[in-house]
Image (cartoon, rainbow, N blue to C red; front, side, top):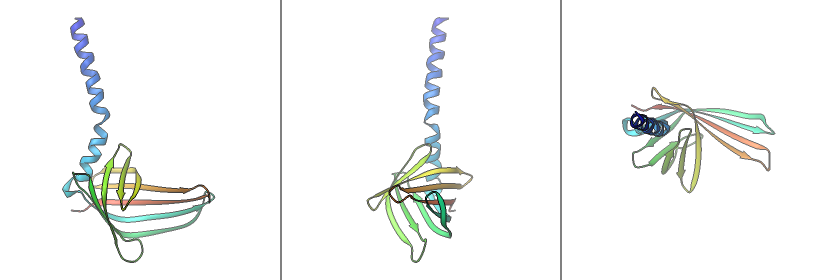
Length: 144
């Protein structure tokens, strides 16, 4: 009987260990599914000064982002004027996607998805010395 309890305990520990990393792997699989191509349907930009919203703007059809299995990505974004293209690398955790491109690292919080071909990411930049904050909310849909 003691042997069965030990085996069952070991099985439960292994199950907990495997399930703890499953959300991160599920997100990764969703990002690279169907060639990993996502349309940025819009970007909401907000500028805060002293924690007060000072300016906001919406940029529709703002570009694309492509994630591949090897951890590289291509971001094409148009917020104003001509498109900017950046190539870099990406990683994900349960809550964030981190992109490093052109020598800069950007951490975007996954606020919704990825599910049913949709995802929402939020990037926040704080400037404590000037009491400024900028947020970019990216609304993405899988490109078919």
